[in-house]
Image 1 (cartoon, rainbow, N blue to C red):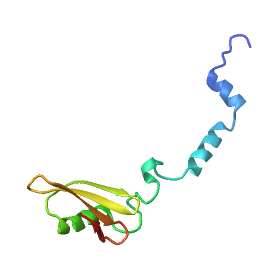
Image 2: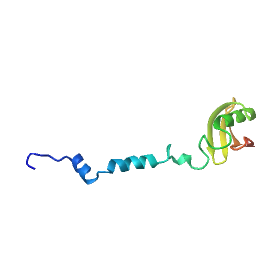
Image 3: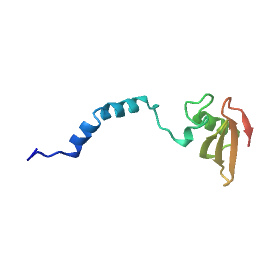
Image 4: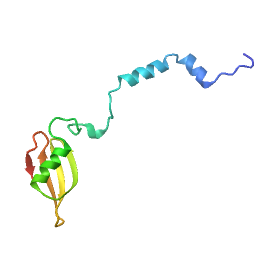
Length: 103
């Protein structure tokens, strides 16, 4: 073996010949999409019920002003609105049926 060089890649190929196949299989078996903490519960946009835009539309009918924030927490949306007098109100909306639960 005089004059031949063995690289780390060559050693990996001889030691773990099926490593590439194993990595590919693991990647294909992984669930699609991101695995963020915010995706626990019904916080995704594809969850049943109304979406964020619909929650804002409902809040606009109840309380005029600029929308500051929209957050879904569990089974409700919380829509923060700022009126022309500088008052901030939070409208609580049921995420399943769009019913206003609180102002």
